[in-house]
Amino acid sequence: MDIQIGQHVYRNTDGTIEIEGALQIEITLRGAGAPPQLNFAIFNAVGKIPGKLMSSNFTVNEGSAYSLSKSPTSIVITHPESGTEVLNIAVESENKVVISKGNFHTLKGHTVTITPEDWTIEKTTVTKGETDMKGKGVSLG
Image (tube, rainbow, N blue to C red; front, side, top):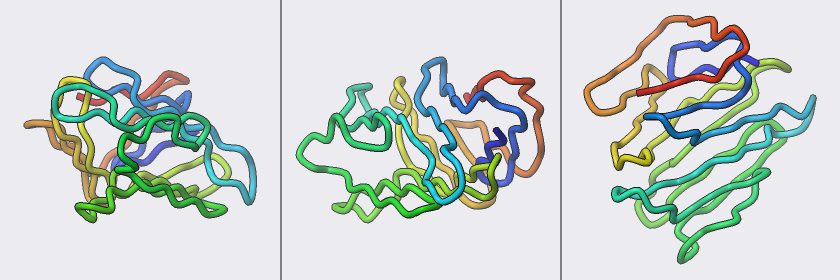
């Protein structure tokens, strides 16, 4: 599967995204007309997990802090109180997903920001480009 984060495309991935050494996102494509299946750990600034998705459904959502919207081609997690899109994933083709927006913390408490142009963690920003992952997971940070 190819995963595009901002404008950078990670080709031939296994669908996992490790951020600062911790597996934080796992995406599985389920075929035409079905949204991707998502496992995602939402950390706060001190490394605790106030939200967690397993198989595209919340297993942890402290204080109902997050909302989840699914369509046949996308999954969007928002934080209604702040109006922030925590993660926006869309299926672009049968073998490609695009993460066009995101604003969440890593296990270490650092902020990940994803825009349609780039992704940033701390002082690292990655823009347009392409990386062949050769069947392995994406590693950010």
